[in-house]
Length: 141
Image (cartoon, rainbow, N blue to C red; front, side, top):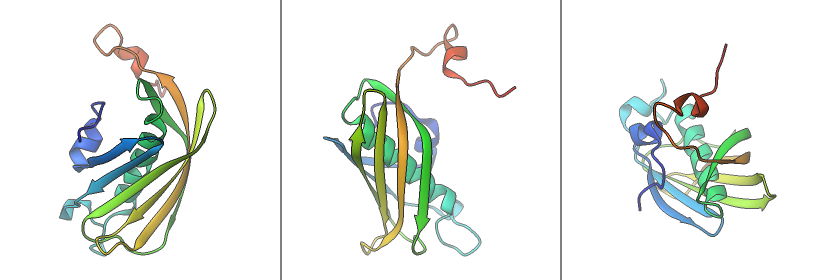
């Protein structure tokens, strides 16, 4: 299954969308050595990105035409993540503009490595091109 939107960072990491429907999403990740930390396990930032993306997709699965931006996220790490990982996201509640989600990250043995909760805001997708690029980019100055 292919992602419905082009997300360069997700493509760089090599995430693979496996489920995207009914308030649920699943994404597989086969980490490479460059995704590891100094302990030779998956870097927490890569794990958090995976959880962020799977929760956003769980939210978007009920509004696929809308964009979804992270408002807040909390992650708890239970054990080191090794090998091929599977993230499962679930929409817990939604309003007209917000989505409340949870995500779980499992290792190749099916053991829970991390759990997250996240709040996302639904936003309209804007056309991308030279004339609208500034509308799709947040200013930081």
